[in-house]
Image 1 (cartoon, helix red, strand yellow):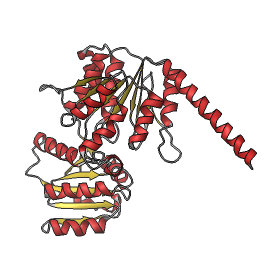
Image 2: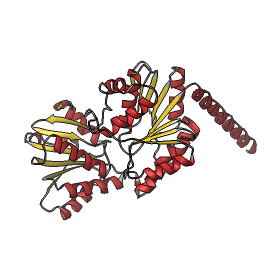
Image 3: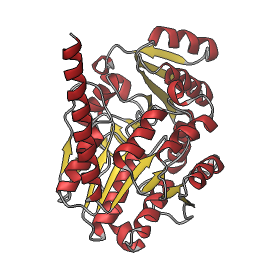
Image 4: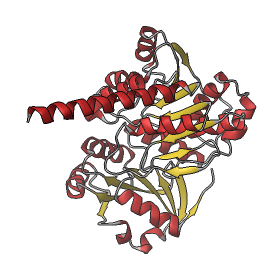
Length: 375
């Protein structure tokens, strides 16, 4: 019995050593690794950086995370990563090795870890990125990252590179990020969006991506031209004409602050404040804190109607009826259960909460029946 345990332990140690060697060898072949972190906008910033660098003539490999984790190789081919089971940070080892085999100059990787300790392992033991871009610090994943913005900033700072450079468009928690950067001998570069920034994405995302591209030697106009043609994440913020209704897909936004920013931006851009507002709220059973936060969004926006999908519908309906007694609250068991007459009215359907499960189903239906707006 003890001999078997000893052999198993030795095999495990050899495996770990081989993995360590693979990581070290692969990383040495890649001049620059960019680790993109933050609460919102990570996938978009990864794709913007990739597009800007590629248009500047760089050999770049990009990997984004999400419902469909995706790679964009040196030839610009986009492939969904098949997963067996739950997401695991070991996935980043394979990405590092795959990128090194393609002789890339730059690897752009979205942080896939949520737990602070796993963020630290991903950065300091696997990717060892020399460049970090942090989009923002907002209240999400509070069950593992902490309830306060200060705690969340601390958690996100685990991807700041030692002796590297950090770019960020975060404003409120910059001192926390800077303190960690200083401790790691990492150059700290705050990025401010330009007033005349382009409108094909949020100005903060564009400014952050441009700052990284310019640092790596790509001229601003060259990078911007590439970004204008970038392919969005399939589940990023989008708008559709669905029947007579305007459907806003904000299911991947998730936190209170970002959801309010999206609504304020689009309501002003499309003059939606006088329209009949319907909030479609999709909940996940394993995201109780988000359910609470999205309920608070409903209370703040005070829509004409609220449509509930996914988990905890009865509980949320009871709570909303207490807070918003004059608001019509409807529950749908599935995306297909929403009758067609509900969309044959001039209204705005603002979809929030979570993209998973019923969120994917509602997006499939909207894409099949609706027409996408090009912003």
